[in-house]
Length: 402
Ligand SMILES: C[S@@+](CC[C@H](N)C(=O)[O-])C[C@H]1O[C@@H](n2cnc3c(N)ncnc32)[C@H](O)[C@@H]1O
Image 1: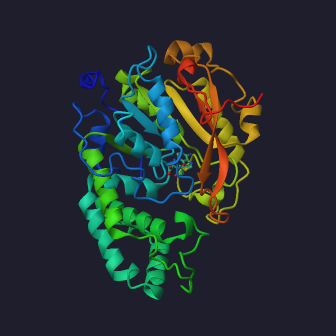
Image 2: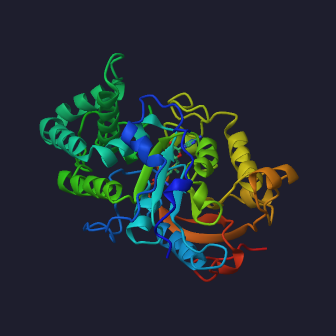
Image 3: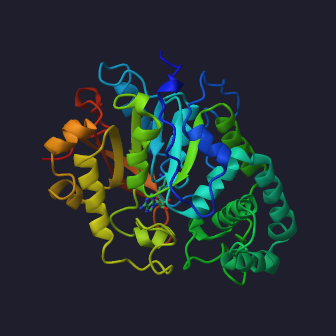
């Protein structure tokens, strides 16, 4: 077991991409260093089923055991001796990463997302846990617990809240984190964008009122778990970046882990419906994406093609990708019809990109991806460049029909 990663091999200099609000310095320092040896995990949620403080559309907690099986089977192979770092470039509620690191499947996780609310939330939950917990209890006891219109008025307040121009970065960050948590806990399906309304409706006539998903004790426990992961060096950093920047920056920050000790788990917005679920359905320029009302944008498919092209030709470390099982994904040569990666000669020589096999599996899962239709069973597609001989194949991880 090589737990002591050679810190001296890490290149200094590059810092996380520009973010508004700024990422706290102490988080950046940690980005260039892997805490070693790792602290011992000692928290009740470590081996639990649900660890994320966020309710997230498309959350992958039920897929996590299958991802764990694939990673566990690859570990110890000649090609992947250990997984010292799991990178999640589309982190959202980060349910899979939190479970995998808690269960010891991977040593550490790095979370990244393009949505500034989501990343502010994770940054504050990690590095300023007590402040967020205090604010969470305060919001609960003053606005959510009394129920009825107090909660809806507060919901309107957070929906239109924007940070003051001259506010200090730490204040802005905390405000965004509270905004994220409040809206996530009180909005239908945890959706953060402009169309979804408060749980229980604006008139609060339903038996499930605005506070029905806000259990302060349980949210506090989950927030403490995030703080604990950060303190023990298991959550190494939170980046607000577009996926491509995240994938490109990992080799610069952690060259000692390339290519065989770091794996990316990618859970991009689904090919269909994504723009109804996320503030940022698939917007490489960052910001709030789309029209805020959940309308699809014409270039969304183009962005899925860009992701596929990058993963197939430029990825410098192995990856595991989950998607809705849309036949287009495995039929189209623009997406994932290929059996192997196809890097250019130049990228092979200059970046050391390999030509790993693409292995595909189907997993049946129960998910809540659509706010309108509730839970339903559906196949999820997994594609990976982990060594194909190690990827399990059975009734849970099914081969694709020919
Ligand atoms: C399917 S969700 C991830 C759900 C997550 N796996 C979970 O279990 O909660 C997709 C996430 O990708 C983010 N996203 C959308 N476009 C992005 C981009 N261009 N770069 C990085 N993240 C992006 C969204 O903000 C959203 O949080």
